[in-house]
Image (tube, rainbow, N blue to C red; front, top):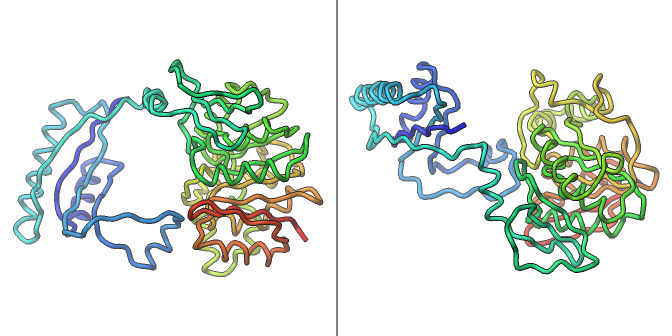
Length: 366
């Protein structure tokens, strides 16, 4: 579908009023862009592990919404007129900025996957692991006889394998995994780690993600990489949703807030939504388990520190007696917090590796 982006150039003072006005007129999915600095408390509540980049706060803001194909030219002109009249009314007692209204046609979302792949290039993730876009393009890239090649045919989910944390995780999987081991990849994204583990010799891999699009992309990429379902499976679920183990632990206010913000997904945090139960299956306690309960020799989670902390309570349910937990997606600022949580929950730290500001922690139950 081709969407039209309807944008109003205005000021910070009126963004809330304009947003309410658009909502009252049947517009959903409103986006606000400004450069107002976040307070420390707001940054904590946002649950992010990446630097927040803002420009100079000049008081300006942009309010945008996305209009579907039901908005023809006449309906868009009518919306422009309504917004212009509202801006004129507001200008009598508040600064409204330029009030400039623009409408632009966005890319067809059915083809963005192909357009993105045009910009992908083969990369050597490690000495013998290569990520190769599965396209018709010819690349000036040498694949060596002993290379394990992860073919990427779908990038509709988070993860193309270029991030430092992916390299960190795969190197640790390679170092700790024995031929035939089982691997549980929590937050599998587009399946890079799951597929990589299979190619490195895992006997069985289960990839789990909260996002059904991630599960779909992972299956496509696994098939493109020549892997069969008897060796690699993907399912949709959230280990933190309705999990009694985590709930018993996360009883304090601060930890409860963390729980509410933590979703095991494709590297992106979103609030746990009980109304979205189909996406939030607890694979141990739920009534529709996507895969039978089992223990794994390696559990890997390349997510975020604030998800890994509550997850560390649940992972033991899925680890074999000598199983290893490989956790990454952790910024160096969160390293000590994750280490403390692991130790407090009975893990022994086996090793810590770093690349730039990212950290990978390997542990085992003591």
